[in-house]
Amino acid sequence: MKFIELKGDTWQKKLIYFKDYYLGWTLLIIGAVILGLYFLYSTVIAHKDIVLSVVISTPAPVDTLRMPEELPGVFAPGEQGTADCLQISPQKNTSAAKMAILTRFGAGDIDIFIAEREELESYAQTGFMEDLSGLLPKDIYERLEKEGALMAAQIIEYDQVTFEEISRGEERPYAIEMKALPHLSEYVSLMKDPVLGIAASPDEPDEELAALSLFMDGK
Image (tube, rainbow, N blue to C red):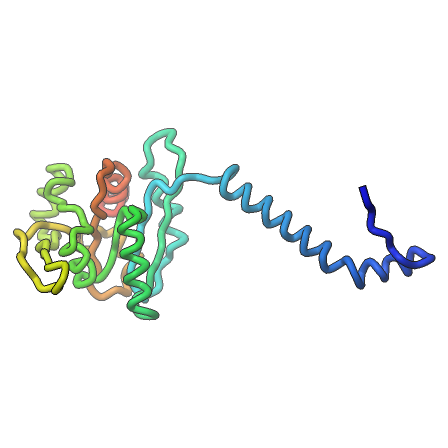
């Protein structure tokens, strides 16, 4: 093993030599080791799977830190995981925001999507949102229907070459209005006409339905 030879005939001179020639690299290496250990801890040791992901598309202020603290109550007993709430602001960069949302939809990284009515309708029309009539329990669906709190949209099929509209499907309920979600309204109070939808997914929507119950009744 070859050790670094510090030049100088006294410890003071050796320390000055070390400071001038090796301190920067030493600190850099120590920093890299600390960063590596932190990454290892956060991704392996302390890592928890995101069980429920809520994405809110709005430039308005949203408390994305508080919501995940309230959502763990929707998890099944003994279930290990965490909730995530992300805000994407379309006002800052519309194209980048849409690309970020589409990427998340495509990767299955959105469970609950909250946006202005017109924006969510555009995603419903392209098949990214669940038809709530076949997803929600009968009692919840009938309650929302009675309250007139369901937003309908049509699936639109486009020509893949010309992008011209080919056909429109039957109007189906794809989102829920805020008047039926009093325990969510405080998060989106600065939005104009927000609605909530559940992203299309082959997985069972247990956490999504539990979160919906929390937003509706606070439990």
